[in-house]
Length: 153
Image 1 (tube, rainbow, N blue to C red):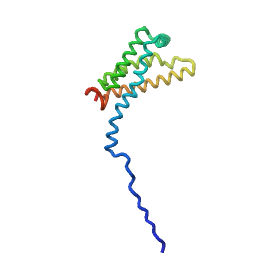
Image 2: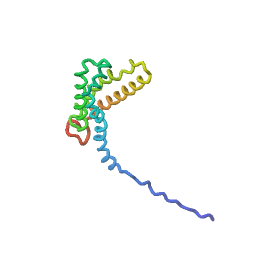
Image 3: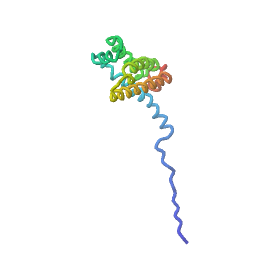
């Protein structure tokens, strides 16, 4: 008579419990705010340089000596508001106000004839559209946990 071998399988080990996942997810909002706000905050110094003003003038931005630094201030206020979670919904709307004209004036790929530059401007246009979507989500949903204001939750 053949010998029977019985194999017992242990239940799979759970690396994360649902409580662990929930606790860890609280850090997603501040991490997301930080990553989202970084591009606006880190680009600010350029808005106060002649190179940025000249680039905007070349793209047909009216009064670039005034509007480029003003756009920088709007992006800084919006970015810092989102980063800190201090009235992040208002900060996100400031980012929207910044992104719409910047996207349309500075990344108008449809007017570029050089194929390489057109592709680069189209990629930047789509990046800005993506950031616009993120800003609208923050404007709707708020800043989440670890924010400085109750209105951002």
